[in-house]
Amino acid sequence: MLWQNIKSWAKEQGYKADRQKIDGEEKAYNYTWFKIDDETIKGTATSVSKIATAIFNHITDNAHVEYQQEYKEKLAQQDIKHEVEGW
Image (cartoon, rainbow, N blue to C red; front, side, top):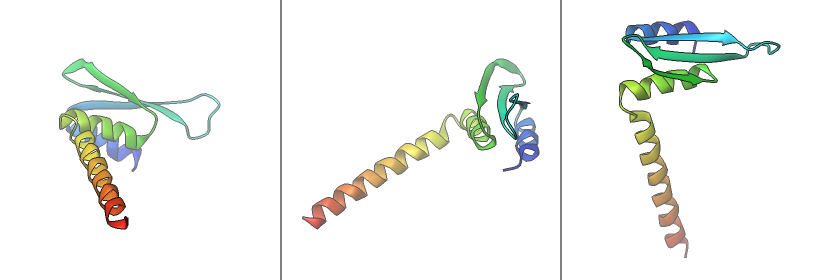
């Protein structure tokens, strides 16, 4: 993901995203975001993908987290099924 694309997408969604270079680190940044109309809603991230996920989760009331939990449960069920069948 390109930083400029995420920054633009966040702005379209009503958020401000920013990044600050970490001193002494090549191509390393700290990312921050906040909701433009309510600056108490904010967060930090260590990568472009993580800031995009954080903003998406706020917009969708944690849809990505829910999806990940469902996916993990589905995998666990598959593992149980394989164990039973392998008996």
